[in-house]
Image (tube, rainbow, N blue to C red; front, side, top):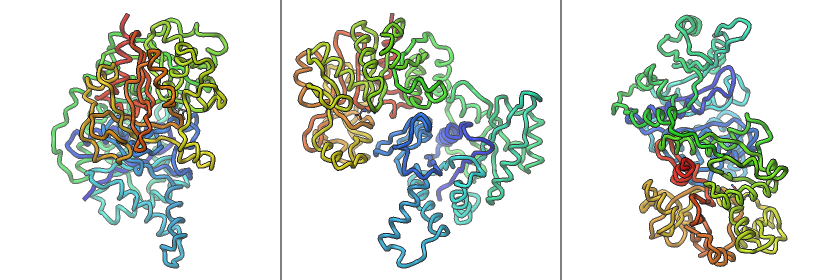
Length: 563
Ligand code: GLN
């Protein structure tokens, strides 16, 4: 029988429900149970693919090509597993499925109604995601009391009735404000959140009390008395600097054992936090703090949005830093700023990253930053758009292809070195944009004797036997040779027509994906006479984990710490 841990937010959103859920998942795996996470997003959008990144943060991409909520990225980073797209459930998906089924006549004339059809579909999706795991974490998006949460809470209560209370634990994540004029931590909003939850028939088993400060005994007791929840289940979760400290903090209050107890489970193994703690220690006491310039386009929208837009890159850098003992200091640079005032703002940087991106804004600033990195031998990592623009820059300034560009920005360029494939163009002409992206994990076959190969080999990321877990088209031709897997999210490709010319001019293509129709897609490039100049069409940040950093980030960060 599978067991569930349901995580619900109270009082306000944005208090780290995703990180708390991921941390609980990590803790439970330390006790020997296989855990996975489901995120329920009550919005009507079908998925996160079309959401504005500045509003919702970055889109997380799964192996199977899902564009989903970034909280699932936290689950993957903490628990160290690959999560399929079906683990992100939105209201839009549920209604679409029910309506599609109704149109196909599958309800055989029944009146299709909110109850039972919507909860049934939600339950079906939860069950689907639960297969082959011992414990399933379900994070309900939003805050208790939101209208749009009601169908999900109703469904979960129904699930509890079916499987029995001993198989489900409710965790409420609440927030305890400290109003500045009284300087006292207030429990009232938490009491009200508990009440709201009870209106849905749900009594929280555990309350995680988020706040600026740790929870003191007076307030712990107060919550116990007012909400009838024993004080040992009222857990303090104060603000901390490093998210990877959250599971360690929870375990100080024995959260894992308390949850297992409520689920009638015994620990299967003794947790071992040694490596995890060592990595945290290295990040907290770094031997170097290299300055990394992240040249993006969303920068002018203010610090707050920024972090979420590039969250995976940020985390991937932290993971690499935790292994190397160097803690990167990220400097956000607006590429439009470079267009206005030149590359002088890049002076003094130890490394430059050009992250992924779409559209035409800030492109020439990014190209200038790449030229600067190449010429001044500053370590450079290009991700997706970053690789496309590195190819444009090389084509123009080294290979002599004047006016070379990506057709995403200049459809009339004389040298379309980055272009849409013929097969995609046809789909686009029919305005079916949804089908034109290369999404999810793809295998790349690396050339030996390249830096990229060396980096992947060092981290034991050259794979041989993962085939069963991915669809065949993701391996493409050549499926018999060793390969590396990274995730993708882009429409344009390095045009196969220019690869030979660029190779002749010294650009090293370190790896390719070979589509089933034999088209050769460039996946990695590098430059020989440079301390570190590497770019990839993929997004290696999506496969970086706290204890197993992405090879390219490791190589890049290592290069930045050198004098
Ligand atoms: N805009 C580019 C493309 O669609 C790059 C996308 C990205 O960086 N994720 O191919």
